[in-house]
Image: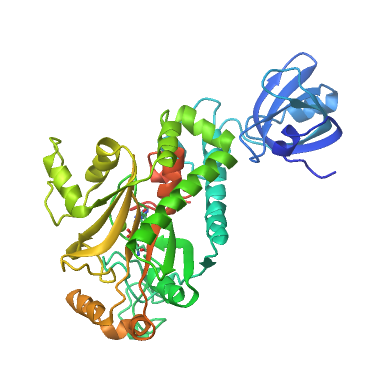
Length: 455
Ligand code: 4AD
Ligand code: MG
């Protein structure tokens, strides 16, 4: 007989004379003559209860079963007299698939702290909270592809190993096949020149936008920034749409629409898993998400944002001055206290932004936009791209970039250049937004952060 997933069994329309369930034991309760087993197989947050009468054979099997053990139970699916569940299994056979040593099994019935569970990241998906998290993560990833497919975007696979630093921040991991301590130069390395893990697929995506129109990438990106914050990791996933014949307003429209679509999709498709977060992680989760869906986002030029921040009586750790990059405290003030909704800040000073952003007529600011959301701050960073060859070249010179290395990028402005725009959305930050989880380490299977590379 094939196993039935617990989610399917619990949603059954009718009783079943024969069913085979396989899963991990959450609890075992022994009574005189029979035992209850509570099983979860990861298919949903719900467990199924199995009741099994004692026979010498069953008792021998039960003696080997404790919390965390993997078992197979065959029997009947019958209506449950118990509260809160429609179906239960009247077990006939019990097979122990994998025992769990009760002396050392670290997951107890009680609630464990996030810190403790980070130390056993290989086992934490067996808990209710992290099972729910990783089902939502899967659903969110698929919703992103669904969103773009519905809008006729093409999915582009951009390289992970790259020779250019898109963001110009110099926060790149080197890729080499040379032995540690080797005195060889980059010319004798694998690619014959310095190579790195990508910080963004944007420059490649632009080439495809200027060929296929509307495209997106969705893949892992890497940053060697040494910041130990609840919002930064060294390896994260980024969604990067790039739209041709478009400007900064189109770009913000797309970002806003996408955030709203993804939230709606998760609320519609993961109600049981989301309920856990709304109940135990962030009591304001539902009102925050509903608030985001209800109204248009605020759109605010950087210069006005600075004026607002300067006028407030709040004591910021980082002083506010025109020209600074906004810090998380400033970003959170704008969307949590001032506007109480997501805020797009746009037209940032050119001095704090990369070379590819389109110069505005004031010659001081560029057509950049960041989307700020409650609790997190920046979730999206994007811009209209500089499509004018002469302005782009001047910006590259200012930034001290080697134009020979970017010959292919410049070609796109030489042949049929058009206004285009795009952005990057941090996939993990989106997951933090929809679940209310405050630490990025708790929305990733195996997070990579400074001095931490376990699992
Ligand atoms: O603002 P960023 O650096 O933008 C870019 O890389 C552009 N090239 C994107 C584009 O226009 N195609 O990064 C985009 C987003 C941020 O808003 C943030 O959500 C996320 O990526 N992000 C990180 N997430 C987790 N850990 C980090 N260290 C992150 N750095 C950026
Ligand atoms: Mg940014």
